[in-house]
Picture (cartoon, helix red, strand yellow):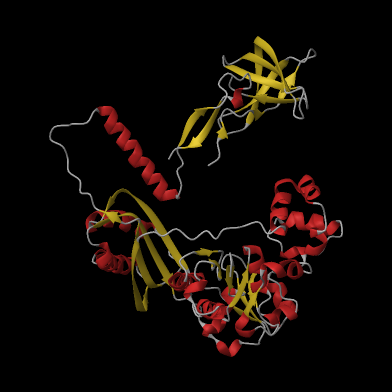
Length: 401
Length: 89
């Protein structure tokens, strides 16, 4: 279990969520329509056997497979299930890296000793996902190998959908894998296939310097994958937040009703025990329809605050302007970026200089930008070669922390 | 964030005379559309050659131009691939 990484995958996550709700459709040709286009988002193995492919137009899919059952996507439901899985995983192992809907990497090396055997740890990880979603677990020395192991875990007689590839078995394991499984650009895969390289084994036989010379930065990535370079699991950032939601048995159709409900949810979220004595930096309001469609508005507050009136002034216009996707069956409000309130008081006699005040305002503005966009968008000019005769070499812009 | 070079050159269309001197340059107009602006005179001209000993040689012929509308702009011709670029100098 030295330096092992686990990859937990729920194959065809949107479809798995739908089939968990409608088990009578198991084994039948089923496709989930993409929420933003009339294309197939996820197709069942029975549908794939009839020629239904992901990304295919629905009309073409129906033509290829007339008994195909097409379901409308419910992205809000999938995201909620994915978030619940990530939360459950974090209770088992702290370092969890989300990698798209239904996929997460976990770092296992440090926690193997907490379980009586590797099998017990694997069972604990698989137990984070409802069994009806049929999760798979791949374990390997790198994220690439773990992901491949997870994709091959089922259907080969592995107990409880787990496949473990240890350091010594990596070469044998990846040799027959098709190059299409490599996490690199599609153009690079196309070029590899053009010259007759179809498996990872063929690729691994090539000199590394030739790969770098031919494919540049992508070639370096290929070499790193082939040589099993360490890819650390990057846990998702922990952010203090509180959330309250309100579900309505009768979906709300009027904007006045939605506003009244939002006022109620706001009162509840401000009464939340974890919110007491703290101020929020960001306000997120979400509305869901019965069909699982979602509307979301995210507002970064000018001043971190927790007073109802101040938050309502921000929230109400967002809801009044909103073009909701249908009658609202659930409304939720989330306060993010919570931190202890330091209080704020005006000064009778100014003690700071005008420049110190200006600097403080600039820093506050930068904090707001960082909260809004997740990274600093303000740069600082630094001299690189100010003496250079080439103008673009004189100064550079670096991120201002 | 990796350091980003400032004052990167912008490729522009340039109409040149028989001696290779710019006669009109295409600068973005109010709607972002490029319109040719005639050159009144060449205020200054200089050449930069660097890195000729290495794999990425750089050879530029800079012109500081006075335009018909009174603006002063700096452009250069990349002598490697014969393209024209505008840049603050």
